Structures are given as C-alpha cells and as structure tokens.
Length: 629
Image: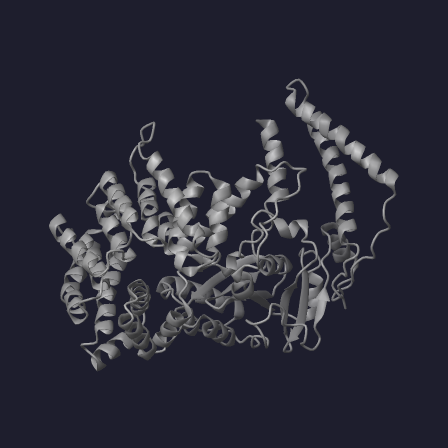
C-alpha cells in the first residue's frame, strides 16, 4: 500500500497536465449553449424586443423543424422567467400567435418547476407543492390553445406530458398525450424524454417499464435519430435511483448495450457538434461512473465546450459537476501511466473548433502601476505581458511559454487567474481577471491572493439569484470603495448579452475600459504603449530576485547554460537507476525503516529532477524566449 501511494502521486503530477491537453479550458465550457440565431433572439428579448424570437419560431413552424422548435421554445421560455416584458408585449400585439402562446405555455411549466425545484418529493415543502400545482393547473388552457393554434405541432404535447407528470395525471391521460405526440412526430426526442421521466421509478413507473419503453423507441428510430440514445438516459435514471442493487445486477447487460448504441450514435456526429451535446453528456457521465476512463475522456473530447444541464444537475451545480468529472477522468488516467513513460499525446486531427472559436480571451486589470505588478509577479510561474491602463492601473495578459512550467501545470485555475492569485498575495491592490467567449463572459476578483468574488453571464442562462448577486456586488463595492453596490447587482443580474454586461461592470467599477481588440485576438496588449513582457522565472530564481532586485524591475531571462558533457549524463543516469532500485527495495521491505526509505527516495528524485531539467533545456534551447524589457 505504501508503494502504491508513493508512485501514484508522482504519476499524477507528471502526466495529468498532458492527458486531455486538447480539451477546452474550463472557462470555455458553456452550459446549454444556444445556436447563433437563438442567441440573437435571446439577446434581443433581454432588451425587450420580441421580433427576432417571433421570426425564429415562425421559421421553425413553417419548415416543420420540430426538434429545433422545441429547443428554441425552451430557451425562450426560460429567458422569459426573468425578463417577461418582451413576451407580454408580444401576446398583447398578437394574442393568437401560435408561437407566442407556445412560449407562454412552456413558461408556466418552467416557472412551476422552478418553484418546486428538482429535489425529491420528500424534500419539497407543502407550500411549494401548492404553488407548483396551482401554476400547472393554470397552464392547461394555454397548452390547449397552443395545440389548437398549430395542430401539426408536437411541441405542445411535450409540454402537456411535462405538465401531466407534475399534476400526477393517471396513466390513461399520459398515454393519450403520448399518442397525440406520436401522431404528429413519432420520433420527437423531447416528447420521448418526458415520457421516459413519467415511466421511471422515481415518478410513476418502474425500471423495467422505463428500459422497455426506451429500448422500443430506439429500435424503431431511423438511423441517426437521437432516440438511439434514449436507453442511455434510462441508464442514468437507474444509476441515480436509491435502490439497493443485487449481485449480479440484472440491468448490467442493458446498460452495456445502451452505452454501445450511444457510442455508435456519437460517432455519426462531428466532434463538438452542439446537436449531439445532450446525449454525449449522458454518455460521459455513464462511462465515468463505470470507471471506463479512456472512453469517458473520448466522450468529453467529443463534447468540446457544450456541457448540458442534464444529467449533471442531478449531482449539484451542473457546470461545476461536469468540470469535476472531466478533471477526475484525467487524474484517473494519469495514475495508470508509468512515471518514466512519456505522457500520452492527444489523437492526431484537425484543430478543435473550440480552439478556433470558443477559446477564452483573457485579460486582467490590476489596480496599481506596471512597476508594482512587475515586482509582484517574479514568482507567479507564468510569462506575462503588461501595459499601462490610465494613470493608476495595469492591463495584464498571459504570454504562452514554449514549455509550460511545472508549477503552472499543477495549478487548478486557468493561467491568468492563478498568476493573479500569486501576484496579488501580500499586496493591497486587487486584480480583476476577465474572460470572454462568444457565449460566455466572466470575471474573478483577486485580492491579497484570495478570490473575493466571481460571476459569469451566459447567453442562454437565466439571471442569477437576487441574494447571490447582492452578495457579489457588495464584495466588489467593498474592494473598490464604492458607496452603493445596487448598480453592480443590477448588472450582475442582467442576461442576454454577456459581453455588454461585462463591459458595463468594468465601467461601473471605475476601471479603465477594456483594451482594444479584447474578445477577438488571444493577445491584445502588445500594440499598446509601454507594453512589456515579464519572463517566467523558476521558483528559486524568482525568490532570489524578489529579495535582491530593486522595486519595479523584472529581470530578463537568464542566459542559457552550457550543454552538459556525456560523462555528466552517464553518472546521473546511473545514480538515478541505483537509487530508484534502492528506494523500491526499501519501501517494499518492511524491515527497512522509514528514514532510509525516504532518504533513498529523495536522492532518486533529485537525480530525476536534474535529468529532467537538463532534457527540457536541450529540447527548447533552440527556441526564442519571450522578449523582455
């Protein structure tokens, strides 16, 4: 056991950064990302304009794009919970518009479920249930109107199936709704997903009914239909049930078959395809829970930036759970790679779409001058570029290094956040780290080496809870000395246009405007007056320079060392082999004390570090280091 623990941690430290290196960074991952047309409609709706939403839904109705129509209606209904004015004005203008009535019907159901929450029934208060059922009853005439105004549309029947589950409708009513839905579109995914929920054990059915329904729907689905992944959703419902599982598990063969079927379906879609995100997230969760980590990593790779609320919301905050499972997968795979074996490389292929379009653009605004940032950043572990921002602030961005530093590889945060965490430690001034992608903008406020506040805006996400926004606004106001946090809270609760809200927050805090080009190019500070590069230092060199260098000076990169002769390599390689063997023998043999085992281990690690440092130097000796001022 001691030997296993001894070698597992070094493997993780050595390989986890390389495994899954082609996965998008955490900041690029978006929950329930909207396509461009829906994103534009949501942005306009948040500003009070319903015209783009009306145009979008009219097009889906005219072309009978029922799956797309369902996704758009869901996104607009969720958005209307916090910004209802645009929907109210649309209904006042066109009370018989089938698209507006359909969104209103879905809004009732979403609002009811928001009150009830997704908790198990035993954890829901009586008052919540009363309000939940009252809203669902109020939804009945609106759902009926939506079905009558567009008789060929299966989406009202998806809403009706959801409403029937909530009001505990009898089986006869449920099956009549499902028949109506199938008459309009026999392979509509949304209707089948709601039917599966009704039939699962936590609602009104059983595991057997649920699996039988899902497998029959998948068997009857045409090639390429997302219903081929419906049995996988049944697997997720089975895995999260509270039932005691007998050995052997009777559902294991059906689970394996569902995974195989979903993997085949995933192969039919391009990597990063938004349309496949729903079932691919289910696939990643199931593979991860089954400890099939290599396949899980492939599933996460195919997902790209498109995380989904379900199934991750079953375990907590959906986006956080997705990122944690992805990180855990990388760590588990790293423990299985021998320490001295080269780290696995990502599969060869084209540049992932996320890298071209969704990679986050990042910049920090430090509330001090460039000289103070230069002195504080000596041991941050990253190469930085700084540029003056007005008279008393500094823009900061990451400069990619040819070889990533060891400390940078081990830090869990994104590079700019981890650097700001380091260079604000022990300082009186804060740094606001900003990230932006086409669908998501966020910030993290670092002060004295501690994350004081953070927030994100996403196009399709609803506004954050009022209490959460108020607490974040108060933290920002305290840090920047603002007397009234209410304007900040208003910006934090805005929805629909992440980039605009992020810029508005920067202005409200009294900070310099975001640098030109931010959000477009990866590095935007090079063209600004006074820009300079602060080259990355090793930890010991950074500590030495911190103590010996005068304030405001960031030394240049040290001159490259002379190459080592062959004798140097041979002696240290022999030393590594001898002391590694001695350490293994010492830990394996119980008669040898812990002191000698530890001493042999440290000597072996010393030789390994020397060789690794020399190898890295040889690899990059021909690379030009970042220019320094």
